[in-house]
Amino acid sequence: MDAFERLRGLVLADDELQEHLRAHIHWDDFAAAAAEVAGQAGFSIARGELEAARRAARRSWAQRDLASAGPARLDDVVPHGWTPVDFSPEAVRWCDLRGVSRPGTPLTPARAGPP
Image (cartoon, rainbow, N blue to C red; front, top):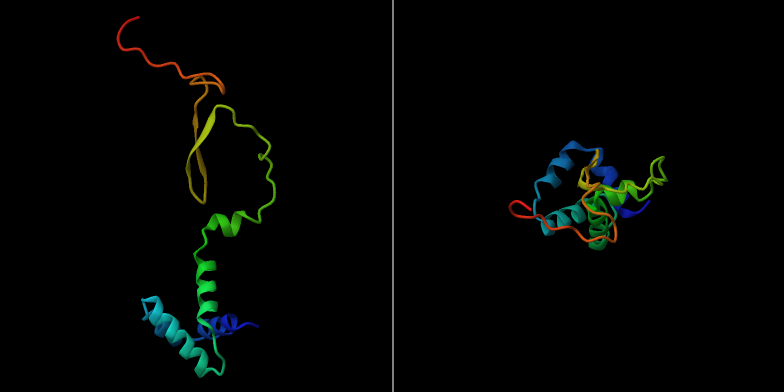
């Protein structure tokens, strides 16, 4: 078990320790407090290990959860004329652009006034 996992286990098992570490809102203060907690428990933790855990926790849900997702039933569908306009963890909103332009054809400018 690496030092971060040992520290994480200690913190998750102790509500007071969680509260103590939450009180350190600045990264440098938190890292020093976490290193102190590890030292009191008989092991050391490098700042680099804390920073690596912090980076992993900050990765977006798409990097964490979708990167390992396998192909889905609709992955091979070509949504010609439809464009995604909004993404969220729960859904994708699409806009129907059929009839606006086809690939390889220029957009026709709108006319002002009667033809």
